[in-house]
Length: 113
Image (cartoon, rainbow, N blue to C red; front, side, top):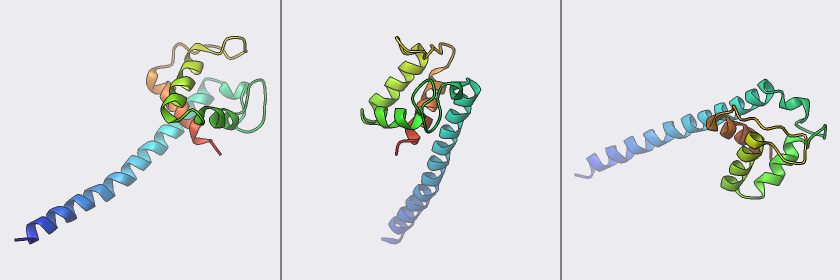
């Protein structure tokens, strides 16, 4: 009677193999959405992906924030983008939703070298 168990294991394995690419595709879509939001909200006016403009590059920000650990980094980036950074030209962006803030943070963190 081991045959039903083998079928169950095969079905579970197939489900997992289909779920992993779907999750990866979803993650890529979120990262792309973050870049689109950065572009839409004119963040490239002051920030470049590489090199300094008015503000630090997105790759420098990614390295700095990623050193905090993933959860802390995302929360800190969300806070800085939402509230702005006092003492710098970084303005607040209070109209962004939490989902949009998370997408922007995910995109920035994806640039870590």
